[in-house]
Length: 175
Image (cartoon, rainbow, N blue to C red):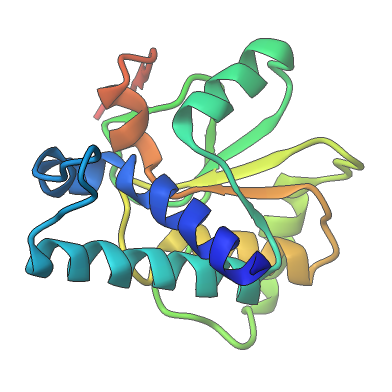
């Protein structure tokens, strides 16, 4: 029962991610009907997110929850993991992580990552990238932060796209 509730909750979370908003706009919540091919897309994304989250040992946070967290504690550590971004969530740092899942990090890369994360104690660490994407950089970064012993690790799967589509402020970067 707990597994079904967890999968339903994550499925609902996925349905709120901007990357599949066109699919969701077709969903009739009053009758719980959705065209089959669209439901397959949602199911695939939901199951991938659940499996990644369980395997990574981190938590997931929606953009609206992240905004509330920032409003309460502007000193949280937010890390954009994608390259070549034109904007960031204000206050975020960039540390580009590979898309491929790494079993071992290069020593220089690992030291730089640990230096960025620092001694955060219980300070939340939020990883995000450009948008929802299977095999994402933010998943890999969150997974590695947990492997390195950090406890309060979150992934924002909607990334800067979901953040900006909610109308939240962004920091424009000089290209």
